[in-house]
Image 1 (cartoon, rainbow, N blue to C red):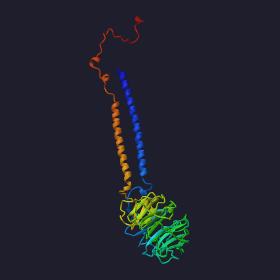
Image 2 (image 1 turned 30 degrees about the vertical axis):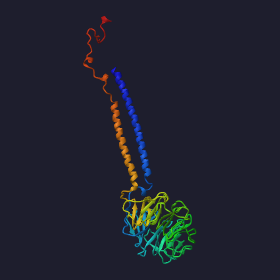
Image 3 (image 1 turned 45 degrees about the horizontal axis):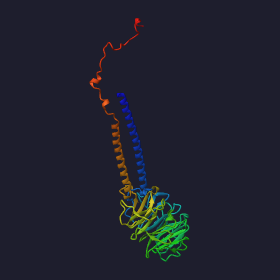
Image 4 (image 1 turned 90 degrees about the horizontal axis):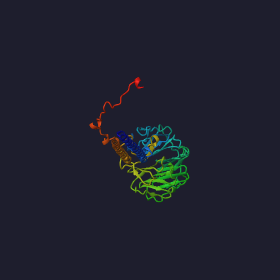
Length: 438
């Protein structure tokens, strides 16, 4: 009887343990699904590039200067060049950690207004207050290429990326000039431009054959290499100064989308310059002197403004500040460029040069959401672990057999069975029986 009851109890215990194991497997699968879901959610919040991966602005090794232009060498983005308003050109070979002057052949002092590599990525051109200079050894030596240019400040520079020898120069008082032999000779290309119109910026879209000019009188465009120009200022306020013009097609974006940075904010054209609209977020009191379109994702735009660096991930519809770290507040940002390994860092010229994200990290509000999700994930993991342990202890307690009435140790009366008389006890035979009993 007791054996039967014990067998029944063991069967029940086995069923309980089996059920506990099934529940543990279910909880394990649920936990794995939650972990995978949270990891995917964290990954979706993470940016696609190092620039958006957190961190903060940090000052580079180039300080106490007045930088107005920046460029990275496409052949090696860790090589950066910075043009100063007084002290010429500085170069860095380690992503901006250290800078050295590169002015051999330059008549200092001079202001460097624009820097650009040609299509071959071997020759670096500088538009300066004292003409155009070129270097074929990474800034080690500079040579003047000014034949045909007036004695004027060269303020802007554009290069035909499909024809390395075709260059365009903008000046402060003499319009635009073009060279078809790498700067050896220049000729005027200003028909249709107002006389003495200062040129602040040039941009050439090679596949469309369009040359854009940002001026103190609005936006102009030439569709024939500078032979003739026409004004494209419909929708721009009177008296506006355009500092930068950047077609999205220059970086592989929408061929009809063009950005214009001005002393009255940012303007967008969705019809290739035929008309302009002010950004809906009301940047009318912001000065925009730098526009950078991320060639890896042409819908990502950066602005260098009088209130810092702004970023848009939707082609300029919504803007947010790239904040945190040491970037000076309420200071004009004059130039922007992408550089370092895999173009993972953003450089900004605010007199000195700053980098984002800096190597020292720091608090950044862009990382708040992923941080909150990470905290929630570990809190949920802790709760599930504690809950699972409590459940296992409860199941083990339930599975352990308890002492019921049938399992009580036998009493003294139950243990003492009546003894039979010795005569009635069966005899134990050892060996073969005697012969007389066979």
